[in-house]
Image (cartoon, rainbow, N blue to C red; front, side):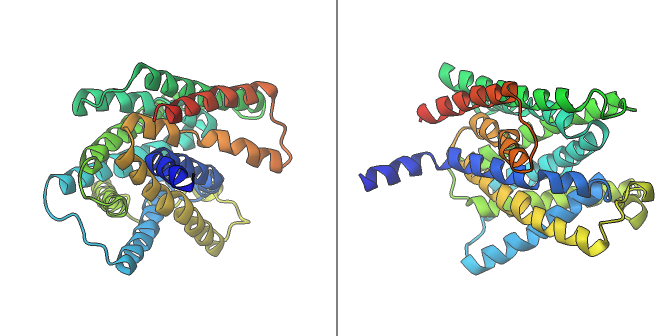
Length: 317
């Protein structure tokens, strides 16, 4: 019986890794949102990626694991990092700043079906009708939860958006960047000996390099552009508070999060990995309940729909 359970867990390691990554992202999302009031999107992306690179480098050194070597997988992972971390994450942080967390997450919900479609076109990665339906249910449930929380909190509490189309464009760019990045990483990891932790390090390294090149070309690699305007700074957050928060968020959301994402992309289809990884809003609800926030029955209904989708994706394995 124990051997059977181990085999089942081994077969589902990609799906389980994606869900664990979603839980971690839910735990650190509030830290990133608050830090984004003091650090620009470029600065926030560089900070969390650089910290995670250091942690991944130490982990690889302790493990003594050999790198992937030169070849097609290496090039694909570097390109994946430049597109996903350099472009996708920065665009997402811009969308967060312009639209707020709920609206930005609604646009990010486009990433899983987009990823599955790109994987079908470029990798010939076909999914069963049940898998497509599971992805649809998962995305629908997550979108339902996000929109329900938004509708309860936005009408009078938040002023009208100043630049909505800028935020929408960045949100769509983030979804496209993350979807393309996932497909590139899946191509490099599937049926190869490349380890997920090396994939995480290479993707982050390429992303940071792309950010530095882009930021330098735009003249934004300086204190003025990396920090948010002074009137956006929370006076309760001193520099050491900010650094400590970034270290915690980078450890959970980037170091562990991107490592788990690579495990998911290696052992399950790209569209399924993205769909399960996008469920972080579902895990925010228990956190909200613990903080004394009321969660509506309609939001719980959205959770139920998403859980049905997740259950379908697991059962198809």
